[in-house]
Image 1 (cartoon, helix red, strand yellow):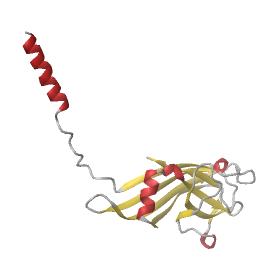
Image 2 (cartoon, rainbow, N blue to C red):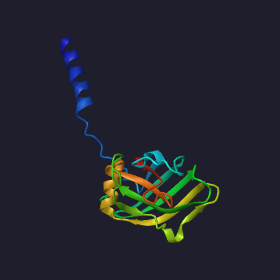
Image 3 (tube, helix red, strand yellow):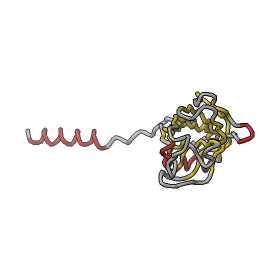
Image 4 (cartoon, rainbow, N blue to C red):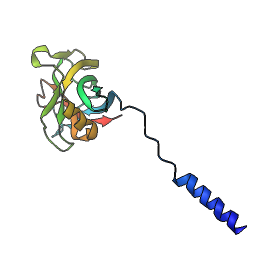
Length: 174
């Protein structure tokens, strides 16, 4: 009886511990989405002027091309955001992804939406819904860095009243 018990334990151990793990055949994603809960209070220092109640939601999507090994070879980005709480007539002049953590007052721009003061968006009633800027170029190395550490980058929208940034939030990978 003891021999059968030992044999059973040996078989169970072999079944549990000896099967090789299966490699994943799932390719890495070609689309990665990040969200940002935009707020004037996330600016450093927090906004206290006419844009103080401004907030919004932002989505930044990386669209990736990969080689046969799964390495990113090219990338583009798409910005989509909605805003509310701005005064009527507010001029939105810039939208970017900046490098920097939550405590960094102003990090460098790493991805530009293409919006400029020359083609600014006027918020007639202080709101904006689903503003989209697509196919913005993103360096493959930068795309890898954002994927690896989204909290090290922030989504920022600039107004005429706050040219350094009116609402901002760190990226959160979905």
